[in-house]
Amino acid sequence: MKGNRMNFIVLTIFPEMFNPFWEHGIIKRAIDRNKILASAVNIRDFAQGRHRTTDDRPYGGGCGMIMKPEPLAGAIRTATKKAPLAKRILLTPQGRRFDQGVAREFASLDGIIFVCGRYEGVDERICHNLIDDEISIGDYVLTGGELAAMVIIDAVTRLIPGVLGGKDSAEKDSFSGSVLKYAQYTRPRTFEGVDVPEVLLSGNHKKIEEARLESSLIRTFLKKQDLLENRSLSAEEIKILKKWCRDIEKIIHDQSIRGPDALSGDQ
Ligand code: 21W
Image (tube, rainbow, N blue to C red; front, top):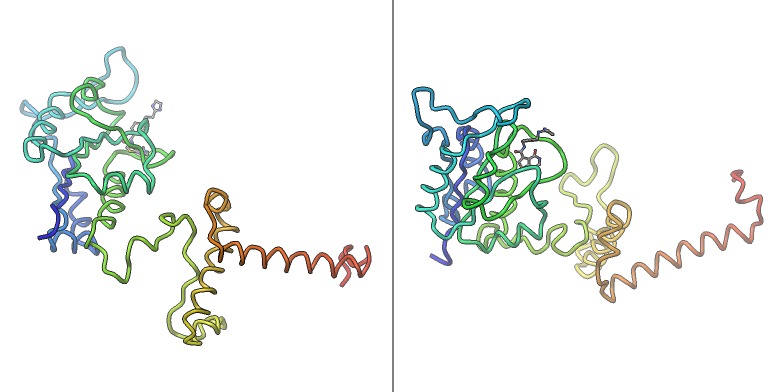
């Protein structure tokens, strides 16, 4: 077996949420091919007493409940014994923002232990010794960390070597090259009156590559201009952008020699 399989351990009070996630698509394939090891552990299994409570009222008052530290500490310590080299990540709205760069960083880890908060959050003392990093997946309010764990596992798994086939390689994706994917088409040739662009049927691979690069650039320019601004452009990309400049300048030039009336709306 090539490399070491990445170990994902999720600590949660809702482990059943992960069953359908492990059982579909590329995640399932990665598990079946021993590229990743994945498990969800119930924090409640580490709770004491007849009711096995995992939450309690906040000191100082206020609304909502806080996750008790003892069950969390027990769950984290047990997971750390199973995966001693794993990074322990608390999922919290206050964390560092997850993005494709963080996904790449995590893809080279030995394992990740995710701590999913519920209620109003976890007791602060959990963070001191038992947490290595705090992550948020974006500025919106979820009801807990479980979906965030799935988002991160999904994005990281597909970056692990051998998980994606050569056909859907991770290198060619949006963001990794900082331009968006070109417009894509499959059969039929005409769908609801709209044809597939002629060039894609031509069999001319050089022309197809050029058309796809132009499509990528125009989509990036229209939808995510900031990606284009922060990119070092290739000679070919500059050639395409300069062609747009000339095309646009020609339109403006042709308008202006027709006189100001031409600009006032009447064709
Ligand atoms: C959401 C817990 C909000 C606590 C002021 C006072 C994990 C998450 C979560 C949650 C609060 C992530 C409030 C993006 C997320 C998560 C549950 C604070 C409101 N404001 N990434 N009280 N968004 N969310 N309570 O919500 O655990 S990663």
